[in-house]
Structure formats: structure tokens, C-alpha cells
Image (cartoon, rainbow, N blue to C red; front, side, top):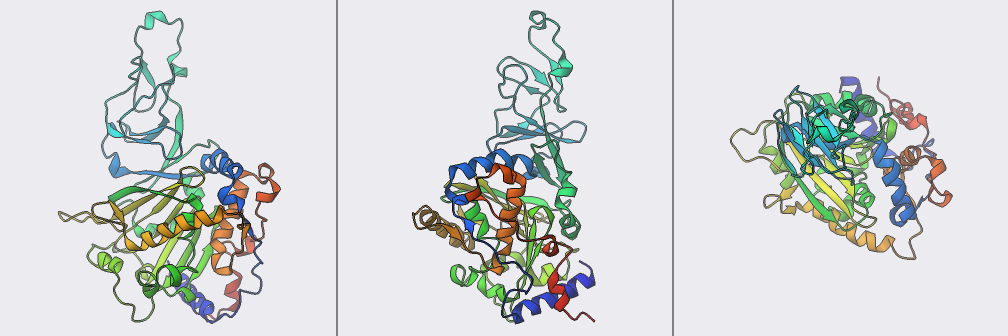
Length: 419
């Protein structure tokens, strides 16, 4: 961030602390329909549209570091193999042989000179091209050029590997928009993969994710973990195009060292990280399912995936600068990945209780506050991706947050004195 952006953020923090009501021009947010968390219709719409049209964080280059190395990725039910090609490119394909649909990879990860279907021995290179088949004399005029593995769009931001099932989607950089520029200080192209774990949660994936996109609950759920290190009244939310968002909240004066802060203090630093990330919680939501605080010692994304209407998968990641011969850092788990750290246990264990409650006859909808605007904006954007014409009226979210509240616009700045 440049100095003007830093001054603006600091001024916005003081504006937020001083206000006694939402900003005058901020819209009243209609209730979110409760069915968006429990209705099979909306879940199927998410599966058919949301996951198919968005860029999804799938892997890190350290998982496939050498030519021929691959990883099998099936987080939303589509079988995808991501492979490091001999040419140096990173490619993704449906794990589906063009002969009879059998998988060309059955191991979760590994290294292969060629991708060979075990069913009938059809062989493909790392570009997905069909190289050879068994008993070619039994086929008449088989055109190899039409029998390649089907590609899945695959692009990188630094060492992060994203996939997208929509051939008409914008590029990853266009999708990230201004966030890509803000992320350059964090050196995603240099940080190593230190830890990656998965946990099954007993709640809808949005319930789990939304606990990480607002600070309204911090005093209640995290009194000893997050509340001491985050000034929720000075939190500044920013909304970006395509449903992305950011929160920046300063650490209170005299904040004591929590376990998480102690973990960070023991780690190496990314020298290029700026003042805001060093003195505040600077966390990004990347539509549809990524939430991550980014700091000078670690880049620890939390990524949420559906596992049915009332279950989800939380994927915890830690990316960090080189830790040498010491133990690899892990921001989110304990006991070598067996357990979540306390702050995530506080959210996820309560999420199971929330799921029971939203399934009750008494749950009709969600009245959101100004502090929870990132949640409403996410749902508003989700309807745009799904297509409002595809969503039953009783499950729709009105589009009330206009472009005047989407970066680079921000009506709050009219109240600031930056002279």
C-alpha cells in the first residue's frame, strides 16, 4: 500500500470508531432468506453455477514441484488431475480417459512420465495429448488429435494454483482485480507450503465461512483469543468487484501476546510486507470460498468446501518464508494436524450448533448489520453468478449494495479530513 492508502485506512478506522450509526448513504440490508442455508434447491444451484464459474484455489506449486509430478483434486466432486508438465507449465485435466471414461490417475499424488489409464492402457503426455493405445489395429480411423484429455482452466498467482470449469471466465488476474496488486507485497511467488489439512465440519459451508467474514461475533465467541488483539470498533470493511472483500482492524493499544501471536513471533518475516499488515489484522475474502489474514510471518488461507447441505470441509493452509532446518510452521492446527487451534475450534464447534438452529421451523431469515456487510455483498454477488432468473423468488437476495460502495468508490471518504 502507498502512503495515501495507509493514511486513508487509518482515517477510516477513526471514522468507524466515532460513528453512532451506519453511514448515511449505506443501504438498509434486507433479510437473507433462511433457505439459502438449508434448502436443497439453493444447494443444487450453488453446485451447478457457483462452483462451476469461479476461480477455485486447488493446489500449491510445492505439491507438484518437478516435471511429471501430479496431484488429484476432487474438492467439489469433479475429478481433476493437476500435473507439472515437462515443458514447465502447470496443466489441469478432467481425470477421465477419452476411451471409456476410466481415471488416468488413481493415486492422490505422485510422479509419472506419462498418464496411463489402467483400464485399457491408453497413454497421454503431460499436455493431455493421446500418445498411444493398446491394439491400435482394432480401431478404424481413430483420430488421436480428437482424443486428448479434456482440459480444465488452470492459472497461477505466484505459487498458488487455481482452476476454473468455465471456459468463458475472465483470467485469474482479471478476476482478482485490485486484490492482485495489493497482494504483491506478500510474495506469494516466494513463500513455501508449510502445512495443509482438512477437517469435516457439521454445518453448511457458508455458516463456517461467514464466521470469518465479520467481527460482530468476536467479543462473544473469541473473548480470550481474538478480542484482545483486534479492535472491532475500528474495523474497516472494503468491498471489491466480483464479490471479493477485505477487512482491516488495528491491534488495540497494549494488546497482550496470544498463542497465535507467539507463533508468528517465532517465524521468519517477509521483508516487503507493509505497515498495515504489520500493525493490523488484514484479512481478505476471495469469492467464493477463501478467507485469509495476511501478515509478515505467514499467509494462512482458510478455504471452505461443501459436503452436502449440512456438512462442509475446512481446508487450512500455511504458507511461509523459508524456515530452514526448523519445523515447518502451522498457523491453524495442533498435534501435527490432528486438531484445530483454539480460535478455529471456537468458530467450528459453535457452527454445529448454528446448523441445528437454522434447520428449525423458527428460522426464517438473517437480518444483517452494517458490520456484516461483507456477508450480504457475498450473497448479492452469488445471485449474479448463479443468475437471478435461475433462483426462486423466495431465495433471492435483492441487489441493494450499489457500485458506489464498491472499490475504488467509498462514500465514507467524504467525511475524512486527509489534508
